[in-house]
Image (cartoon, rainbow, N blue to C red; front, side, top):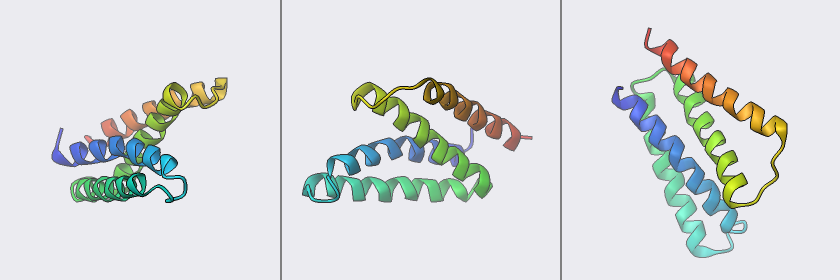
Length: 108
């Protein structure tokens, strides 16, 4: 796996933490969560931009947002007690399959 994939995947994993911090910041009214949100957004986007130096932009963006989306769904259900539905549980794995398919397609 080249560095581009590493950067995009780590940036996507960080996305879940800035989303959580954003929720806990209550519209940027809680200072320490607001600062955490801003720092994590900056680091996450920096890693994403580094990944785009080595990967096609459409693949990098899809993987970055897909990882963040799937992780946020899982985290929301497990830790934030958000609603669970059959479509939500059915479509999240399709995102994962799409991400893996794009990775395999980019290596051709």
